[in-house]
Every structure is written in C-alpha cells, then in structure tokens.
Image (cartoon, rainbow, N blue to C red; front, side, top):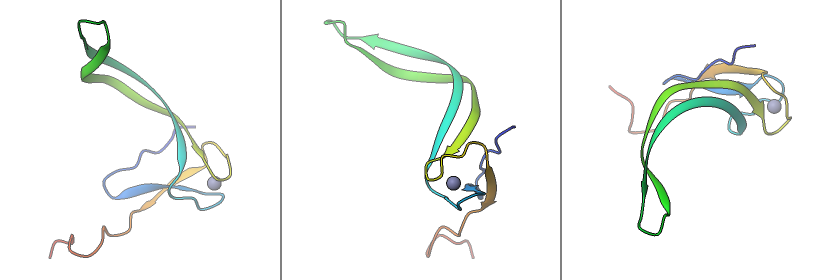
Length: 84
Ligand SMILES: [Zn+2]
C-alpha cells in the first residue's frame, strides 16, 4: 500500500488514533556522499546528493499501526505568517 507523502499544505494523520506528530518512517534512499577524512582517518560527510528517496512505510508511534496514514490539511502556520 503506497504511503501518501505530505506536501506544503498537508500533514500525516493516523486514521486509527488521530496521531499527528509522531511516526516511524522507513525509507530507502540512494545517495552520493562526499566523504572528507581528516589526517587521523576520521570521516565526515560534507555533501550528500540524493539520487532517489522512497518512503516504504509509515508507522504510528502511538498505536504502532503501519500504513494507516491519511493526509489532512495543515493548520495555518500561526499569526503573522498569513499573506493578506
Ligand atoms: Zn495511531
């Protein structure tokens, strides 16, 4: 079952318990990393290019149900951010 992805104006909501804020997201991604090692051999990733990124499942942290997620509208972002 495909997982709906949130957009600029929507967010995830668990259809069973109503959770809006906490999810375990399993995703598979292919990335190219620019790894820069210092002289002692400690690596750090300085750039990461995402080639593909797929969300495989979304599980609710509250009721532990997987893939019962729907999209709902986000609330307005709060006072002072609305375009008049
Ligand atoms: Zn839930």
